Length: 445
Ligand code: AMP
Ligand code: ZN
Image (cartoon, rainbow, N blue to C red; front, side):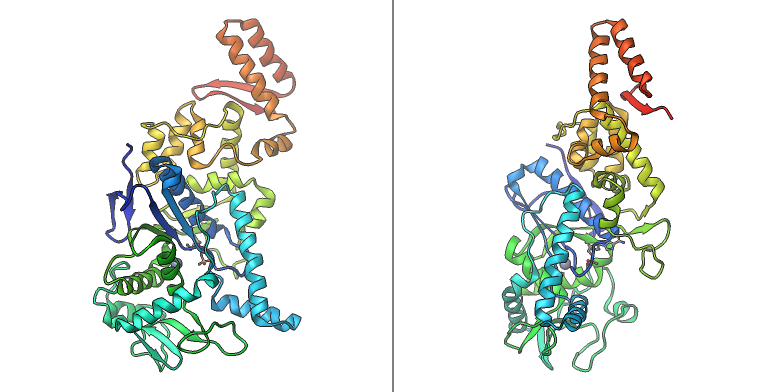
């Protein structure tokens, strides 16, 4: 069996991957906070971990992988948006929260489906797991890791001797460097919220500490425990989540699990920039997936993303998107997709080497086996062929058929026929090129 190696943020090293239970490989990835359209940066973890999900399914069997990607639908940014909606339409704030999160979650799922991602096994929403969050918080108080103060419940960081081990920061560094909230009810500024009170104008749920809402970090710990158990194989997300979000998940879950680890392997994707600049609303370069899908097939977006290794920072550019589209056009013109990469192929070996998608793509370029692109979720899920046809005003399927007929004629040494097919296409403005990658075509302009 192909050996899978993954870079573990916890050890800062590439390690052989061995699941706790090969009949149920378990992965949790932090999903979106839903109050607005997801941006192109948010698409990166979705695509990266979808490729890993496909690879795990290929290696262990589709029925032997459980992938959880949550939807954060309780959050203060959501509440702020809900308050605006509630005020402008004179409706209840909880109704507004439910409406905006349901709508945004559906937009997100539609967007990422258009990017060719498989549905995770479970897509839990935080609101469906509040009881588990309350229960875990109660356990943390009982075990002496958390305290109640002023309607809040806080995790007491000083009680966890190895706090900071994922981010590899000392407590002093964290206090000095982090933008932590100082609050009078906290024993230490590093202590983080497990539960906080909600006033009448803020969504809230009943709890032993009064009506309130969970903190963000406990949401993932509770959903992970409920769906994957105490310790699972892989936990993923963007690099920005290492501290404090993942550090705090580790602290809470280990404390609630008598020291048992939360996840054995931690994977983090690098950040995406746009045309060399950090994406931000103020720079006006904030690009949503939804907007891009109007101009580009989702598959082009996906392919473009995978040309950069997931751990590297990535620069998203229009030029890169155009190159990606061109390559896909070329591959579509010469190939029929096949979804399962054969064991032992260089393509599969590249993917198994810490998800080296640029190398896997280089392997696709080398051979005439573009059909392996199915392993990346490419070639065969979207309407790229139709869109190529629309863009170039040619019928890509008819060209592919003609190329196949020409190849058959050449194989039968009927060169008169193969030349006739080539000339007929040329008369329509389609230029065939025979190369090491098989026959490709382009429109003579
Ligand atoms: P959020 O909704 O902000 O919590 O983000 C959802 C996911 O997208 C998290 O895994 C983030 O780490 C990731 N993410 C956000 N912005 C970027 C970016 N510019 N590049 C790569 N990943 C990002
Ligand atoms: Zn999370």
